[in-house]
Length: 230
Ligand SMILES: NC(=O)c1ccc[n+]([C@@H]2O[C@H](COP(=O)([O-])OP(=O)(O)OC[C@H]3O[C@@H](n4cnc5c(N)ncnc54)[C@H](OP(=O)(O)O)[C@@H]3O)[C@@H](O)[C@H]2O)c1
Image 1 (tube, rainbow, N blue to C red):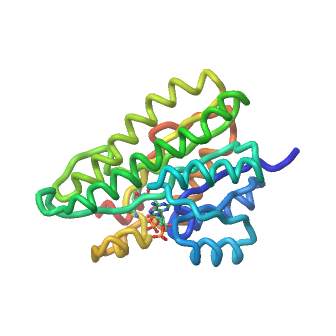
Image 2: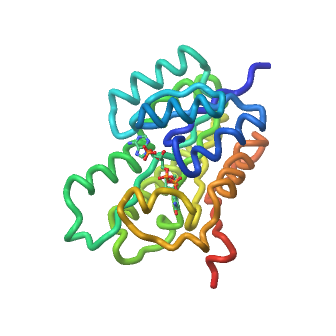
């Protein structure tokens, strides 16, 4: 039987990058995607997988690249909606551009990538989607209103799709990690102590567990490094 094809968004760094070799080792056929062509080519070469430039904040890119991937490697069995960006600061000081980019990437990117692959999964009566959400969608606190809004939206989206799609054989699952030692904060210009964070490998291991065993639908899977409890 051919290996199951899984698209991973935002796989040039952090959790997504750590996930690719783990999916390969678990017998899946991972497709590495990201917004930066140089990073996509370098990572795909190094890991020996197919890579595609896919900007999840751009509808044209979603439509074109998801069609290319399913034509070349379909049917698509899995989607990991992992691409995401961080935005921190008092809401009144966040720029409209940054607010829109965060919503377009974290919220619309997840919804529209799902919209691109879900119909074929429902037709096939099988498939799995993991949305990488965040503990930021489980509580509220100051300085993260926009990031939180983007992730709370995906918490609702994931829960609704879970019950809509499970009876049709498609699993839609949410992973809610706490702090992860990735480039996310630095990319956003935020200096964060990540000594107590989980590693991208630890987060990726959980996603592989959620994908394995199609008899199980793991919803609201959350966790953080024990070092983060002190
Ligand atoms: N780090 C944490 O503490 C934490 C905690 C909970 C949840 N999460 C979530 O985990 C997910 C992965 O983040 P990470 O921690 O692994 O951060 P990361 O190392 O910064 O990785 C994020 C990835 O998303 C990509 N990306 C950003 N915008 C994109 C776009 N428009 N289209 C396609 N790809 C895009 C980035 O590309 P570039 O390499 O080009 O920047 C990068 O590959 C995110 O959804 C994040 O919200 C992170």
